[in-house]
Length: 632
Ligand code: ADP
Image (tube, rainbow, N blue to C red; front, side, top):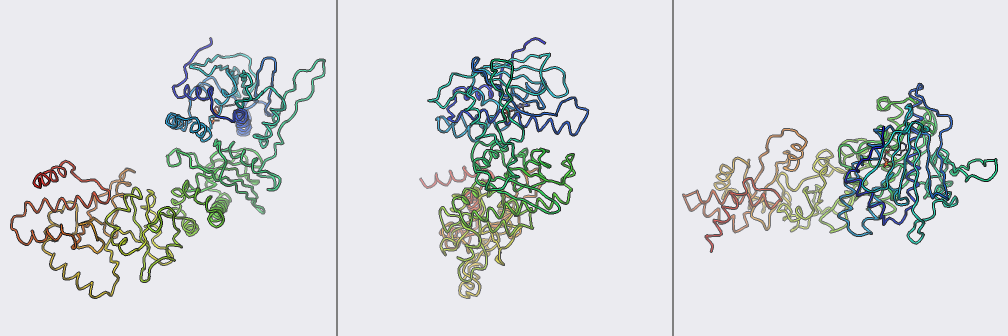
C-alpha cells in the first residue's frame, strides 16, 4: 500500500496547535504520557495472551525501552505490547476519540488567556499529542499482536498525517520524537540527556510495573553494555505507607485517572485473612465534566496478584462513588475473571461494602479535621454522593452525617442536618426545606415569606437529586423533612386559639370567592384556600403533601416516563390589598367576566413568583397589557 496522507479532524488540529505553541510550563510530562500508553499496551497484551494462548505474540520479556540519539536529536519510546492495526492507528491517533477532548477545546477557546489554557491542559491531559510539546515531528511504528504487517504513522503536528503499511515491524509500538532544540528558559530541556531521562522516569513513572530500560549509547568497540532499568517497578499499593512519598502516589493517580492535577486524598486499605486484597483509592480534587453523563466510565482498576485485569471495574464501588479512582489488587481471584462473574461474587460484594465504608469515613474525617478540604469535596461531589441516599440504605446515615446544605441561616456556609436540629426553635417539629433551580430563585419565592418573617430556618436544595432523596429519607432523628412548598404550613403553631378563630372567620367570609375561583381555574388547580405562609405576596401555588412537585414531574418526563399532570393548590393572602379588592369585587358585582381575568392573572403571578412558566405566555402578556393601558 502506498503512503496515504490524511487530514486531522478539526478538533485534533486545534489540539496540536496548542501543543506546538504550548503554554504549558511542565513540558517534560510528555514522557510520562508516552510511558503510560506503553505500559497500558503491555498490560493489554499480557491479558489477551492469558485469555487466548494461541495468540501469536511473545510475552516472555515485556518491557519498555527508551532510546536516545544525541546526533539525530531523537528520543524513542518503544514497547513490545499489544500494538495497533492500521485502522486502529487511524482511529486512535488520527482522531480524537475521547469525548472529553471536544469539551476541553471548547473551554480552551473560551479561556483566552494563557493561565486559563494552562489550567485546562492540566485538567484534561492530552496523552499522545503532548509529544508535540517537545518534538516538531513524531513517527510511530506499530504492529498489532497477531498480525504480520505493521503501520507507520508520521506527522509534523500540522494539518495532516501519513499512514503506510510496513512489511517488517517488531511487535508493539515505537514512538520517535524528533526533538525541538532545547530551550531551558521555556522549560524545554535537553531530552537527549540520559540523566534528564532518568530523573523524569523516576519522578513520574517509577511505579510502572514493567521495566523501563534505557538503551545505552553505542560505545566504541565490541562490548555493548547492558541496558539500565530506570524504575523500581514496585506496585505502590503493596508497599507500606512510610515507604512511599505523596508525590509517588500522586503520579500513580495521574496515570490511572488521566487527570493532570493532584488528587484531594489518597486512601490505603489492606485486607488480610481469607480474602486478601490491597486497595489504593484516590478522591480527585475536581469533578470531571462528564460525571453526570450516561457513558461516564466508573470504577477502579482491578489487578489480580499484580496482574492488570481491567479498567473501570464497576463491581468494586457503588455508582454514587463513581468519581473515586484507584487500584484494587486481589490475591484470590482467577486471572480469567469476567465482569459478569464479579457482579455476582460474594467476596467482591464484601469488598465493595468495605471500600464504600472506607471512602465515607474518609469524608467524615475531612469534615472533622479539615474544613477546606471538606468544602472542596462537597462542592465537587456532594450532588453525586446524595444519590447514595436513595440507593444505599445501609449507609444512609453515614451519608447524611457528611452531607451539608445551603441554608437561610447563612449566605455562604452550608449546614449539616445535625446543626440545623440544634438551632430549631422551641415548638418546631420539622426540618423545613425548599427545592428549586437556584438559591436566588427559591430564596425569593413567596413560600419563604412567613419563614423569613418568623426567622425559621429553611434548607435551600438546588441539586436535581434533592427532589428525590428528601422523600426517600423522610426524616432525620425523628424530625420530618418538610417541603415549605407542599401541604399546609402553619408556623403559628397549634393551640393558638385566637389565631385559629380568626382564620376560621376569614375562611367563612371568603368561601364564596374561593369556591368560585376554584371552578374558574379548574384546569390547573384543585383547591383555592387562604394562606398562612404569605406576608408580602398576594398568592402562591403549593403542591399537595403527597403529590409530585412540578420539578419532579419534569424530571420523570425528561426520563421518558408518562406522568399525569398534577393539579396544585392556590393559596391567597387575605392580608393583601389585591386579594381584599378581589373579594370586595366578587361580593359587589354580578358581572364575573372581568373578575375571571383577575383570577387567572393572580394564578399566573403565583406561578411566575416561584420561578415557573405561564401556561399561555401570549395570553398573559395580552391581559397585563390591557390592564396597563387602562391605567394610563
Ligand atoms: P489516552 O491514552 O488518554 O487514551 P492517547 O492520545 O495517549 O490517549 O492515546 C490514544 C489511544 O491510542 C490509546 O487509548 C491507545 O488505545 C492507543 N495507543 C497509544 N499509545 C499506544 C501504544 N504505545 N500501544 C498501543 N496503543 C497505543
